[in-house]
Amino acid sequence: METYLNLMLLRFGLLAGGFVVLALVVFAVALTLKRHGKLDQARRLTEPAARAAGRALARRLGDGPTRRLGDGPTRRPGDWPTPIRRWDGRR
Image (spheres, rainbow, N blue to C red):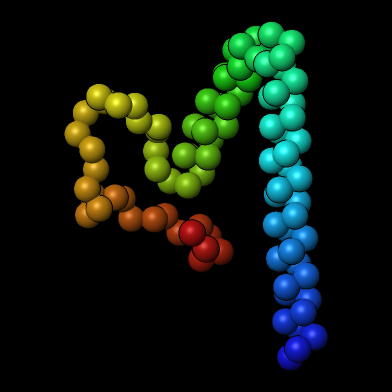
């Protein structure tokens, strides 16, 4: 049991370390773009891809189309649609 817990702790440490390194790389790239004055251009070029990815993720999670502020009444917790089950029984 102790070996299993050590492996789980090691896995968690590697994942957490990977996320920290990834965040530092993204921060360094953004800082470099900002110093060279190209951050706005990069933001304009990546915005359509980020919006499309957000819409695809919302469709995949079953939330329907993305909503914007002022699009109408907000949903209450009881108003959410029931999750659709796939053919293999998973959500």
